[in-house]
Amino acid sequence: MSTAVLAPSHPLVVCAARVREALAEVADAQPAYLSVAEKERVLVDLAGARAQLAELEARVLAVAGDVAVERGARDVAAWWAHATRTDPRAARAEVHLARALEQRAVVAAGMREGTVSAAQARVIARAVEELPAGLGPELATRAEATLVGYAAHHPPRELKRLGRRILEVVAPEVVEAEEGRRLEDEERRARETASLRFHDLGDGRTRVAGVLPTPVTQRLEHYLQAFTSPRRTGREDPGDGPGVGRGVERLPRHRAYADAFAALLERLDPARLPEHGGDATTVLVTIDLAALWAELGSAEVIGGDGVESISAAQARRLACGAGIVPVVLGGRGEVLDLGRRRRLFSRAQRRALRVRDRRCRAEGCTIPAVWTEAHHLQPWSWGGRTDLGNAVSLCSHHHHRIHDRAYRAERLPSGDVRFHRRP
Image (cartoon, rainbow, N blue to C red):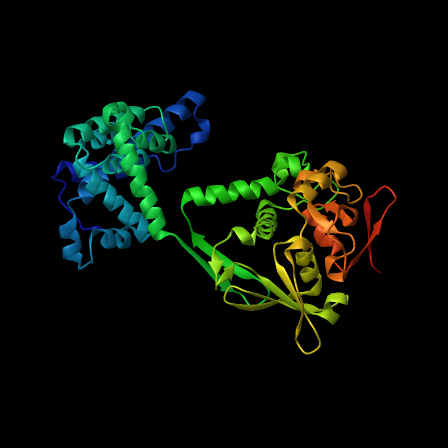
């Protein structure tokens, strides 16, 4: 970094030069020969010096607008980034801190003493900045001084948390009302900026991207955790991530959440959803009769903004248990059978299944019955009846597998279902 040659008249110019000279003097000094106590003292002193240098740097940056003008730069941050070869975002953050310290004398004094780091100063300045308007400068100064005192014992992350609750310390009498206003503003902004987008990738997948209010995402995550809970999966090590039961492939959390989200949607009751297009919100799956009976085939899902194709195996599985209406078509596309709601097991039937089966009846599976799905042993689409004698409890994993043409299922005398991979 090139600098102009200046006469060492101003104390700040002299100070900057002496700092460089002092560092040059120890450029070849090896710290390996320091004692433990000496290393500790050097590191702590350097941390304090770094805070002091950051404050001095900020003090000069705050009044360096004329340097940017002289160099023809867009602003101080742009000049500073170029002159020091730093990232523009980091340079702007330093300029922002410099301007904040002009208003926060207590924080600046803490940095000059080496007791407040630059990271802590940013947190404190932001916390005071976010105090409710109208509380007055005296209260802001008290909050600032309190947080500077906390900085002696708390790192930036903890200091940030304390900053959010600083009103409870400096003005407990207004906390409840101000907290209510803050939460209302936060919730309003969350609603106004919420978004959810779908982008079809064209390969059977769709990218979902969105920003939602935190209570909504918390509720969704809570539901997904119910599907992937350790009690359901039988995991021995919580660090392994959600899985699908003992002896079955364990999935990383993002994969388990994706499966759980699909299972959650399949459990939605269309009768409880708003009307859409003059009817209760319903997804229709159309499939030719020949494809319904065949090992291989495809079906079409009619819902949302268009038509998508799925496998016949997936259509049979959805017809088995999900709140989705299958439409069976004849050879010329005429509707032979519009799926009836009675194809689904009732709540009472599902309770009876839980009492009878106690767990997923796939051989060796330990998933509790409360987490299972009711499956038609003789598929509903092939004339199977929706009654307990034609039902078995299967976890989501084995319910998918029993509809997978790569496997053959065998009912054992014990009532369990054994799977064989087809050759």
